[in-house]
Amino acid sequence: MHIVILVSLFVALIFGPSVWVTRILAKYSKPTDRYSGSGAELARVLLDSNNMPHVTIEETKSGDHYDPIDKCVRLTPDKYHGHSLTAVTVAAHEVGHAIQDHTGYTPLHLRTRLVKLAIPAQKLGAGIMFAAPVLVLLTKALPVGLLMVLGGLLTLGFATAVHFITLPMEWDASFKRALPILQAGNYLHSNDIRHARKILLAAAMTYVAASLVSLLNIGRWWAILRA
Image (cartoon, rainbow, N blue to C red):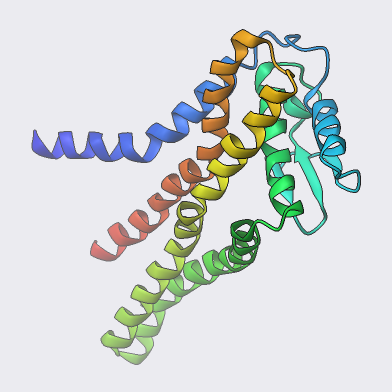
């Protein structure tokens, strides 16, 4: 019974935030004609009003994000073309990141460097985990294999750590950049502000939710090794 409870709590911890984020974004994606302007159109207005005409806006299928290298706000089709509360609020969140970049917000630049390291680190970690058992079989050097496994687990966990330590940056983009701009400019219906707060929280939690799910990769490797 205790094991069932522990497993249930673990599953809730791992998947709960991701389910909540998905639910909130989906909930306020309707009605689809809530606003006259689309997410992309609002993003353009906000960028121009904050002296960032050089920042472009593009449609993407790889998730809503701001690219500080290309100076581009990228929105998924439902946000780029969408006229829902979710579409315009998420667009404002990504503009919040553009404002961080424009004002020299240090945590954003730190995250950019860390993410560049995290992607190859994940691939390296997986490669190490595959190679460790083979190396042990070939060399009969168990301590070397154990060190490789430990290094692999730590490397796999690097991406998860990156998302956790950058949560304050996401919070800043949502509640110190996007929300004040939306309120000051009266871009949202007055009764939508409280709902927008939930969406902005969901936008800030997106990477954390994804990183929690990524912990399953570490757990999977650990289970394989124990077996």
